[in-house]
Image (cartoon, rainbow, N blue to C red):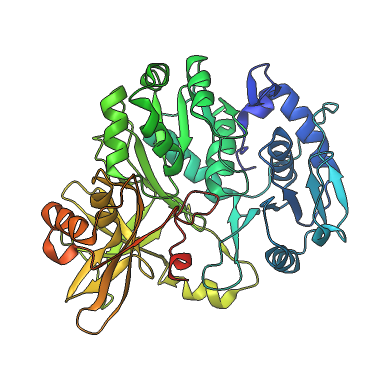
Length: 474
């Protein structure tokens, strides 16, 4: 029989597993309520209205215990996207927090309110490692969202690889405020602590005060996205209580998008802490990370995790071995998804002889550390015969005192092929194009300077803090 996904549930201990505000469950309580709900679930797929609550966590654990694929739904989802996901995944019911109003699009689906209490129920036999566990829908930037089928095997292997990379143990207490319809918040942030037998404290909504409070109260790790760390970086230099709390953390981890080097430096200067970055995707879960016992290199996402093979591929399909040469990341390993639901064509197109084509462009240094330079479709700019990654220009722009936020894209240019466009949220008086171009040319090189600057009040971002660059073009 396969090993259990959550060994700590079988011990039914009194140790705290999950806390959301003033609501908490021990492992014994979680085993009882999730086991009881699991026994009631149909054999088909179930949708989970994934609010950032204890109820969502119970629902997902129950589905995993039952061997029933769960489809997390973003509570902010639009009508068209919801209709597509329901038609594609065909869930048999929706699990939701009691009292939460669901959209009309879910009216035709039976609803089951998620309990937080229940009698102890013997846990079912562990499903096969290849059985579908979650179906997580991608953002759909090039068409309707695709359902990424994640088997139990990929969840277990990714979390175990992170146990090794981060020295993650049952003694760790994680604090975060990430949404629970996505890989970062749900798989890493909820299922990760549960697999280790540790605990998680979810803030509901992110605040620097909440982070500081939980770190002072025994939390050892924090997970966040760059927008959260940007807030921390902006406050930590003048907030001694926040600096002291962060200084006592064992590990600070950032993911889902690149953390600007400037924010790395501000946090390190105030606390001595160096934030760890990692790299993953919905289809692959986690691929690389800076190790807890390894050298911290701000701006990199570390080295491949245990069990993950990674290579860089050039424009002609050749494997790149050169240091600092930009290529597309391809990965293979037990962390990968099984398929795109109902899309054998897309599944086949995503692979190159067993290697998954990530669409992310990167370089590697002499120590094997990977540095993401952007998405192949939106962040790789070909200008004047050079291949230029948007990320390094964004980092350079953020070092200018007049720049609060920055994004870089390319647009057609008759002479250069593509010209570099900087989208800037100014900090005070907007700096001129000439000033910013000279700044970037001095830090990087002249061919990487922006040719156009456009000023915004804010950059468009998704729920995970990623800049929506396609929206900039619109």
